[in-house]
Length: 131
Image (cartoon, rainbow, N blue to C red; front, top):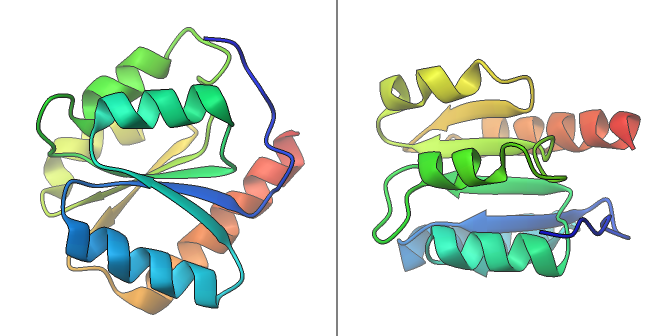
């Protein structure tokens, strides 16, 4: 994978196999002024990241074909290994081993929208400091 820096620090990639969650998050984040792209599984996430590095990846853990943990492991050792990732999952205990990485956080479903927005803003501030 070749790394391309995002030219927009407000670019967020949402990857979740539940269309209702993707739609809700997309509408909320666009309303808040973010640019949003989406994918339905881990394979689509990796393609979208390689195409244009997002400032933040909102990633579901349980998805068909390639789950969120597999995406994180696929990014390890690549120029995208430091990509800020917020796992969104109904099973936060499964995310615990992944959250030990400095660039990975976890948010439990059902999502509290105020907490989500605060987490997104904080992750983007941290990403800006890294670049």
